[in-house]
Length: 177
Image (tube, rainbow, N blue to C red):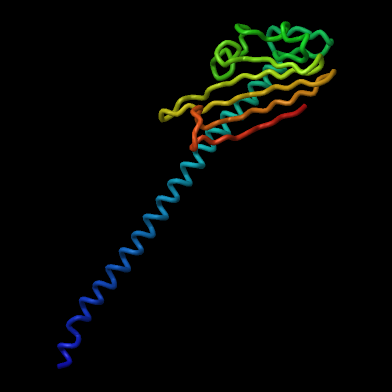
């Protein structure tokens, strides 16, 4: 009689062990998927950081060493970027060889200058990074010059992809001097 009571125990034990193994496997799979998503987000964030840094560095370079630099109307320093409303014509214009990421940004990126008085001007341009896995990161750079002598603020907004959407990440670098 004791043999009949233990026949189902082996089946129950096997079912319990297989259920436990399935639960552990499902947990490991879930953790793996979350880690992959987290890794992908970190990678996309790095694309945005790198292109924002590239935009800021490019603006710093051209602000300090413009090849065809001219002295602005206020007698200030030479720059590729406008320093006032009266200075916009003298500084970099489309076709003036301000090159970032291999492209003349005055021609290819919607270069624009906005003025807010005689001692203020903001120059805007954008650059595109290298396409990787059908994705092109980009940056929009704002160079604001205020006062005489001018205080310059460079703000570079980097995006992991130029296409707006819920997966677009933005990282910002700002330099003031």
